[in-house]
Image (cartoon, rainbow, N blue to C red; front, side, top):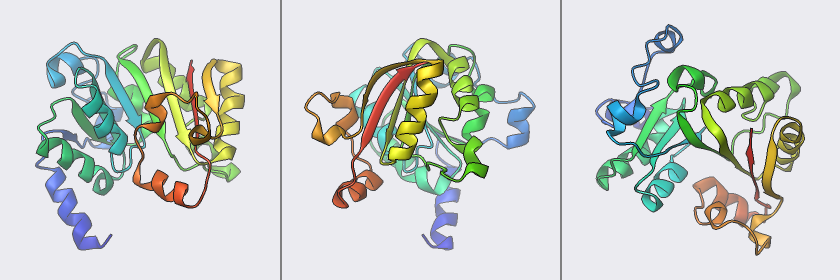
Length: 222
């Protein structure tokens, strides 16, 4: 993506009512405006809240919101030029149950209160195979602890990835700290795969499938 196109998307994001772009310092100072009051102040309803972490283009966020209009969906990613597409689609289709936050996933506890979130999706994150970057892995124990804090009791976490490494790593971590509800290393070669795991295919997922890569999926509680 060219720099001019990125700048155009950044400027357009600033005009979108469904995009929140807080400064990192203000989040850390406890100044995020919707923590604990998302339903009342932003969505104006009492519906469940589902997050997509590292949401990329926001495809899962938007598609799940289309399937479940009585659920509030929030995509989180630091790269606003990517989720611009999802935010714009939601506006064009008059979807009032979609929001995007431009911030780091590690700040999730500063943006949501204890038990405020019903479900979390993690779709095709960077597996961060290099050891020195392990804490940036979206299923690192420290981040899982943060997810547990904002999730309601027994709230589900979904992980969908083409990385057998990340799939196995997460299985090992969750087996010690939570409960695996379902796991399979190739959901498109499994008749028992949950529909929600296969009904949406992201841009990158389609690329992986064309390369004959197996897509793994698991859901678990913390």
